[in-house]
Image (cartoon, rainbow, N blue to C red):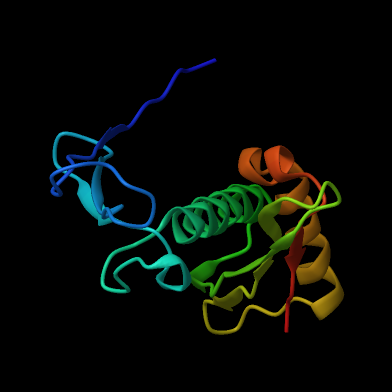
Length: 149
């Protein structure tokens, strides 16, 4: 299997590293052309204008689910014309009492070419299959809900 990587770059701006007295802002380099500015989530003092690791995880999951759904839909000859999703990350304490992403909710909306019809049950089954085959979802185990509708 492929090995993939990113690069994170953080530089201290303050004179010294002291608890609660430094910025978490950093950059994440995905490819030679794609770099994003990241920070802690706003609830932990981060800049809301930057992305944060929790959003990045939601984006990875949503993107993986979409690509898996499209691959399955193509095999089934479903003429998907668009796929939109809104992923929500829920933070809380895990069973060990540690802060964690406790759940990610996906809200995919699929549109098809005019004239194509498929039942809600078939769309639900396709999403369930996409979830089952998505690499990121398999990594996160049971903390993902796909809300179709």
